[in-house]
Amino acid sequence: MKIPPTLSTVLSNLFKKPATNMFPKTEPVPTPEGFRGKLVYDVDKCIGCKLCVTVCPAGVIEFVPEIKKVTFWLGRCVFCAQCVDVCPVNALEMSKEFLLATYDKYDDNLRWLKNEEIEEMIEAQKSK
Ligand code: SF4
Ligand code: SF4
Image (cartoon, rainbow, N blue to C red; front, side, top):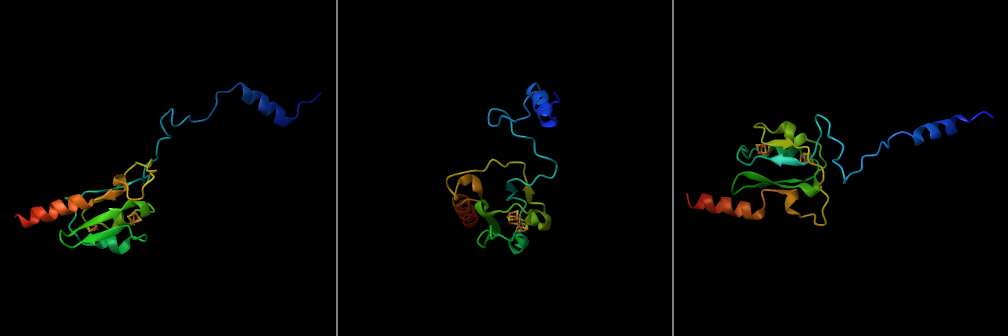
């Protein structure tokens, strides 16, 4: 009797190692070069030019005039990297971090320059 082609494929695959990545028991699949993960903000480099606020299509970035810096609400970010490309001082970078699930859209992990940090910076400016 002739074995149907599908059956022979199934039989040969029975003896092969599974090709499944067992995440989270194992590490996730490595991210490729140029992967756009969580945005990283270097507040010290930022010159407050607001170009990132202008290009962001998702309303993630808010200018804080008191300190001439920006704050990011990353729960809205669509990972387009337009802000990274436009920043004249390379204060922004897309990291490889992508495990960002949370129950709270205001999670600390989804915010750059949190309210407390903004307040501290304003206080520091006043005391100068
Ligand atoms: S990556 Fe895109 S959506 Fe996210 S903050 Fe930058 S410009 Fe906005
Ligand atoms: S584009 Fe860069 S320097 Fe300008 S406000 Fe945004 S992060 Fe700061």
